[in-house]
Image (tube, rainbow, N blue to C red):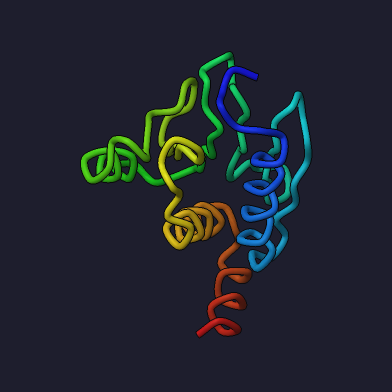
Length: 129
């Protein structure tokens, strides 16, 4: 592992993210190649990446609408980054900068809303508002 985090750090971050997605209907997590994928059905809304391609990061990559990444990068280029290989995703450094967990939760909910059915979103909103 190239980063300065421990296995306990990774587990703590994973548990925190799983707590955030637990309120999002239908989201499941699955470990794959040392990373954790968060999906809604067959569609991925986020990845917890551990030293992905030896980039030295403990990071979460979250699906986002066009322009979201640029807005977040302009506001905080230490915390956010451009993930490799995917367009319209936001990379969030979870180790080198203290995560803004409410913001992480909001980004995960936004990704869920992009993938969920209109019926699921309406039911969620009725339950949470």
